[in-house]
Amino acid sequence: MNIGQAARASGVSAKMIRYYEKIGLIPNATRSGAGYRTYNSSDVHSLYFIRSARDLGFSVEKIMKLLALWRDRDRASADVKDMALAHAAGLKAKIAELQAMVQTLEYLANHCHGNDRPDCPIIENLAERTAAVATERRAGVQSKAPLFGTDTPASSRDRASTGTRKA
Image (cartoon, rainbow, N blue to C red; front, top):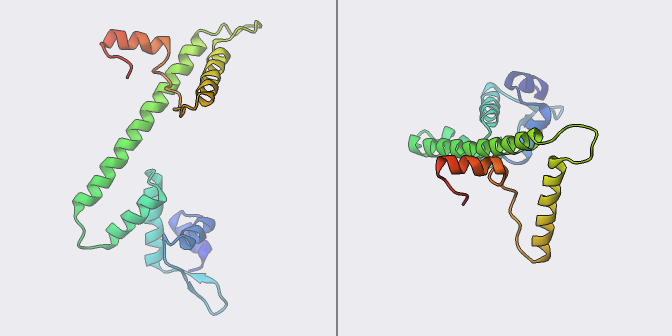
């Protein structure tokens, strides 16, 4: 089958198939007499595997490792499980960061009057964060990403009620 047919069968765009081939995620396709890429069912199966891994949020580097494990019939399932659990932990951390951002935005929005006056806690908070980063850079301090949700009055109340403190 040609690249368009392989793309439709696997759910991976032709552009991505060429990219995966270029970076070595999949082997170079065989070529027809006219020079067109041709793919077989095994190639399409590999592309579908890659798509499934991408749908779960795995990076290209991790997918390379997963493909190697998939093709290795002597693999230890513990290796695959370790990768999956590590990825799940990373996703949980990202979810926590996003939830903290939502908490901060909701707190700020709840304290914004939303009227025609220029006073706005959302803008003030962003300006304070910008000033803090600028001050740290002038002092030569390596700036950390803002700790959304952990540095708002709402999160201070949450920590007080749960007995936890900001790290």
